[in-house]
Length: 102
Image 1: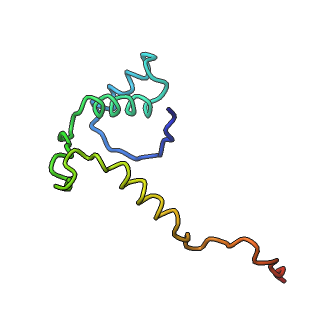
Image 2: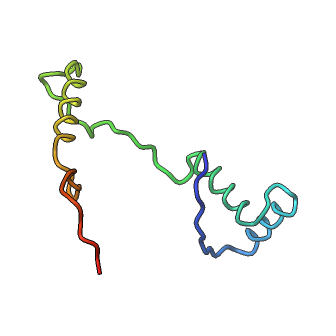
Image 3: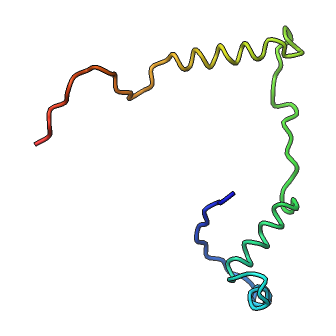
């Protein structure tokens, strides 16, 4: 999966810059930016700096359908009703030709 990269300016201690340059020179990464990107990606994937997230307590389940047996039908009905609504700014078909701007 390709994710576009964006430029970023960072200020690091000299020892950290030397370590990143060492990673680049050792051929493990192609550039200092790539070495930093690999380091941040590894830390993020390992869960450093984040608190575990949970959806517990964020969703209310109707007491009339605790097993969510009617959930599919309800979602389908809501999607169908939403699709039936006109889209703001939509062009209606068959309105004729526009006059050319001059």
